[in-house]
Image (cartoon, rainbow, N blue to C red):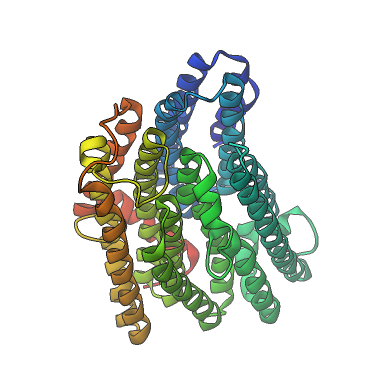
Length: 479
């Protein structure tokens, strides 16, 4: 697991001194090494079972996140080769700055998902806030700087609240085990969860949910999200939406698991369910009204984070399966859509939906990927998100959440028509720009992602099913 951190450290400390032409390919190679490390860890977990140490751990829950971070990281770095080559106005020093902060961002996310210590998790997620602030403000224009300030102010406030929640858990644990570093170890906390003061855990969960929910982009704590996603360089928008928010959800799931083992039950389920429901419905209002396609994708991210919370809140084994499968589906699909939007932006230099028409004539391969991506991201078959959203609705109706499920279905319908109206207006009609040359390194990652979301939508390998099942058992929810 240390390999995941070492590769990012090499990218931070050594590679900035190399010429950029060599640098960008080595950066992508380092991320491929991390992807290969994930595959090794996957095999190791199957063979040797979970590992829980003082500082690091490997189990089914964090292996899912290691897979998301390493896979999306590799594809995004590959995509960045073409994207940054198209950004002809950027000087070499600026390009090295991009990779420095992106590697710091990746290092923080890997540390977050492999550590077993809640305190280190908090430090890591705060480090992601600092590194992404520089990336959001990368272009140094007025709107980018404003978005970065809004992001760091709101997320730092949220993370401070989350810290208070973690401190409450720590106080609950030291009354049982005594003070020490081990009292912040997740596995140690799970073992004594039933003895921790229940009222203390309830209060701590609210602080954790509000704090990390801000970073996750759940409504009504989402105000930073549309601006940050719109102003950041597109590879960073993809990483933030697909990976950073997933990591925030991961921390909530770790704390959620402590509360499940403590027997809190309906209290935490209902809190998550209604917060998720509110996020979905608010996204359904904003998506059809969006004039900027990157902001539209940001609101779609809020919708998908809401679906994850809603699914967990239903509280059944099947709904947890839908949530974790949806986490994987969101990462793959949202990355595809942000990469498509980046190809449009870097070639046409506008984010306005109404200014773009006839993409099939201007960027034909990108238009093909984006057209299919619209159906994938709105949960249409045969794509992977359809499977997770269908299971979410099925679980809601099965567990008696009838009106909530109907409301979610209504929200899905509004979002579907909002996406179709916005993107198919861009794809069709008389072209507003001449045909542009598409970069191969922009297209290859998009093709890989499209094949993955169709392939997994049609056939989900048993290894992935078993991994998700094992993660749900580790969380503490039984069939």
